[in-house]
Amino acid sequence: MSAQLPGILSRRSLVKGVIGALSGLGSGPLVTGQEAKAPGQASEAEEIAQVEKLLRAARLGPLHNTLSAHFLAVGDAPDSHQRQALALCEALGEAFLVHFRGRGFTVEYPNRRLTMIALRDQDSYAALLGEAPGKDVGGHYDLETNRLVIFDFRSQQAAIVAQAERVNLFTLVHETAHQLSFNTGILNRQVDLPVCVSEGLATYVELWRPGVKNAIGGMNRPRMEALRQAVDWIQISDLLADDTAFEPKTAQLAYAESWLLVHYLLRAGSRQPRFRQYLAELAGSNKPADRTKIAEKTLGPLEKLDRELKDEARKYLRG
Figure 1 (tube, one colour):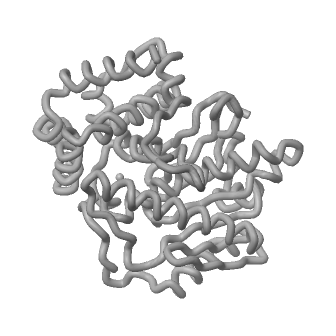
Figure 2 (tube, one colour):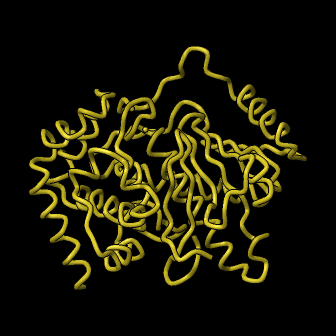
């Protein structure tokens, strides 16, 4: 397994989940508000048919589909795995809505189920992608289609089932956090958005576990460890202005700083309104050139924010 932290790589509109070290174990862009059904949007039956057509074109099968209150799973994964994954999505979704409502966000599920493509194993995932995904890829959330794609990692790790189950859970939580962020009113898929914002939210949520109270928004120690190991620092103004820091060479540091940024802005009540205003202002612009102006207007001088985040990082790393 890779020693990288879990994160994502962007490829056009495709967002891929990357597995990495978690707790010492190898495991691993919008108008704000609920999206209404767009003219010509596929019905649920049409969505199932479209996904099944896509999977059959990849020569996958037999196919199953499973429904929960807010999610739809389609794929060649067994019914039992689909039901288990949907139960986790529902539990995460409930915790997600409660957490963000408590921080002043108006969040609701969209008026249709969210789609998960649930695949049997890495071979099925590679067939769907049309290429080998690499050992560090555990799934992805596709911005363009608004679909989450996961596969059962246990066939890759038959000798260490407990580790594989943790990989499955971590990947599902990180990628579902993306899907929830873009579909409940926090982010919108249709406008320019800094990758550090979407990644910051996903890493803020990614350590959620079922049955653990207040699991969203806690200290993400694996991300902080990436900061500890870093020999450099990405200026927050640069992180917000463009997405080049998410290239492989600096990606893990970019993910770590993205977590720190969102955690810092959501941790204190005095900062939360500014962060909500920032997201709302982003929702009104689709110009990358406006990123810095919007950030300065809503979050304040970025040099000051950068100093505050460095101080925050030092405090956590000393602890």
